[in-house]
Image 1: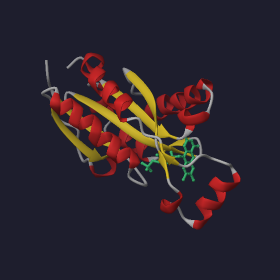
Image 2 (image 1 turned 90 degrees about the vertical axis):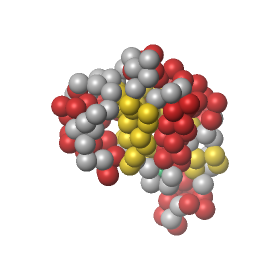
Image 3 (image 1 turned 45 degrees about the vertical axis):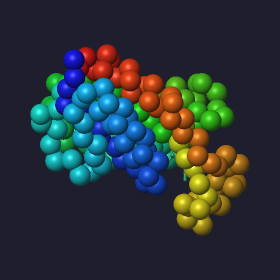
Amino acid sequence: MTGKILIAYTSRKGSTAEIAQAIGKELEAAGNSVAVADMKEISSIEGYQAVVIGTPIYLGQVEKAVPGFVGRNRDGLLSVPVAAFAVGITPVNSPAAAVEEVLGNLRAALEPVKPGAVTMFAGRLELSRMSFLQRTMIGAMKILTGDFRDWDAIKAWARGLPAILKI
Ligand SMILES: Cc1cc2nc3c(=O)[nH]c(=O)nc-3n(C[C@H](O)[C@H](O)[C@H](O)COP(=O)(O)O)c2cc1C
């Protein structure tokens, strides 16, 4: 079966937006009708049979836009299947427990909505896209920089979504 799916993302530097687009393409290729949009610009989720929510992680936190979006669309989100993904540098070189902690934060940010699936993808961290302050912080924290997005893993997750979302 196929359906009408909304992919609602937030993104500071574009890497989460591109992941949202890639997931959208994959779902479209499977015959679904897909809208990909910045969650701050979504006025209603009416008419969608499922919603996928995507957020980057900054300083361990899910973006505030997520609880904002959930709050504005609470009733709608409680009545359709929801899946969510986080994007960050944690999966690149941290223990699985660190990723689990982020996923716990993601679940908490979605409350009272219970997602059918949550995952975390490695993102992109490029010094050239950062402010002086951010560069200094990232340097001091010895955080890896680069584009770590694994498009095959992203597409594979997207292909599994229809079963999870029951569409
Ligand atoms: C100042 C700063 C803090 C960050 N903190 C985290 C973090 O705590 N955990 C994590 O996994 N990634 C962290 N990242 C990496 C971002 O999540 C990653 O660059 C992501 O791909 C950004 O998404 P965007 O391009 O959609 O904004 C941080 C990046 C910056 C610049």
